[in-house]
Length: 232
Image 1 (cartoon, helix red, strand yellow):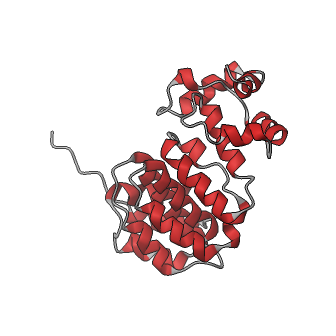
Image 2: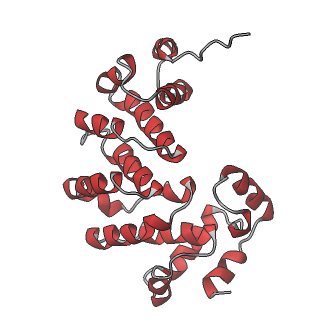
Image 3: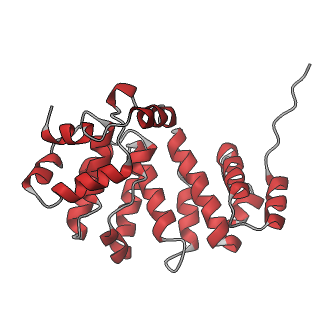
């Protein structure tokens, strides 16, 4: 066992491990230690900017789910744009679950929106499931406010992939767009521009949102595809 693995096991919480395993069906249970996020942040603070951390970032693939989370958190500390992109390019092909994928990205990315957008388009075309999900998440996090462009909605709507966690992120993106850019996002529902499953899931997530008025939610319900009637 490596020193980092020993440090992670020192924070093991078996009840949390069982909870995590239920949330992540794509992750083999034997690869989950059961470490809460505050404890992972404590490990980050201890090893960040050390030779140990530098070696760890080169040691892919990792054995444990929490090692992947630690890797994502360490990338989040990088304050050079090119280094952060390079680290993500190396890491994303090894990500195997939504939880690791959705860890907060490096702050430095938001300071270079034009360069980041070019990278987002590259990741959207990636063969790797969680690289695509990560790219959509960046669009949702950084490009639905002052940096919003209606063409981003079209870009996401044109992603045609079968993977569940990509399509779930597309639905989440459009549900969030309905909160922040309602007029631009609404036609994608009223004109049925999204695949049926994503369309209905986006409406479901919008209805569950506390940031959308009740009158809009009532309207969204009318836009859902109805399940076909079963013949007796």
